[in-house]
Image 1 (tube, rainbow, N blue to C red):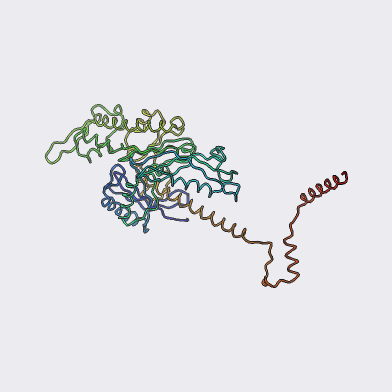
Image 2: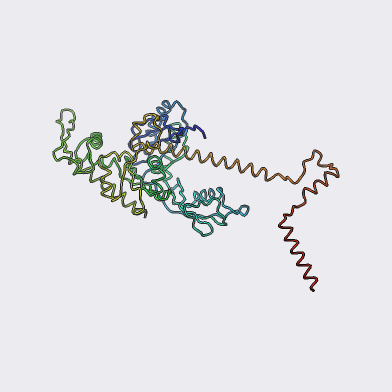
Length: 460
């Protein structure tokens, strides 16, 4: 749909942000409105206090709507949390006898059937990603799509992502209490990947690691297909809590120290560098050595990256990541985290900035050039892609409807204003129209059979 407005709502552990966007003239996304606020009622990516979360959601949505000068009534929402699980799945469908070539509707039917797969109690499917198609037991390569292939049976292997039903309900309640409808729920690493990766990355093989406040989300791509997803329960807040306890300071002070003076590499900090923390009321300022701060950050960040490395190896694609690892999310702003990630995983690493898919005239463009906004911008991208795909499907349906309409018309019958009272001329004309047409090749073949048949009779 031309100039359709899409709204992405990122409900994170540390922030709740709203992004209003549309497809720009260049094909990139143009952000029309943007707002963020401190997250309330959310823990480790899961809504715990519905009322508090709804209040924060309403605030950012109203501010983004005013900036974009649009009315907002539905949003695309990101979902994360330790309750997210993934599993392999398989399915197959028979191709109807009325068409010998596999059609898009056959593929859609196969994917749709996966959503009725039997799950553990309390689980709900949020994504089904096809991995490999098989036609009549013959595996199709990535370069050969199933649509247009001749076959009687279509099979596929899938990567299925599920979420806890109750946690899904909490998100829906919070959004609905804010006076909004949910257009769709998207796994956050899938959204983040859209914002910081391109087709080259996904084809070559890449691991997208989004280090947020409450969770670290992983999405692995290879040959242009998402192959593995995972959500780890450790992220930026764990580092902040370690600093707070290790330095015996307040949480907001610990967060400020982490972002302004922290480093993931102890050897990158000078021995005698010190930062002074103001005391509470009449207390004296507290001095903290930056080397001590770096040691605390290094220990926890290294633990997180070791778990990331374990998940990548568990996926089986650790030797296929030609494009390496892309770090994004708020945790990617830590100084020297790229270097530490390369040391821990022995894999080339870069920091993913979500502006590579944005038009430069987007509102707050300079502010949006930050890894922490990857999920929100990715939600807008995801919504646009889904809307455009739906428009294409509707267009295909309309075209198919027109073909079926003409197919139902019997052009062998003459059109007459008086069907009950036909003249002799019209009857003769109808007979001539209905007479089968024999091609020159069929005629020669029939003559050949006739001559052979007559010759055999004569010989007898």
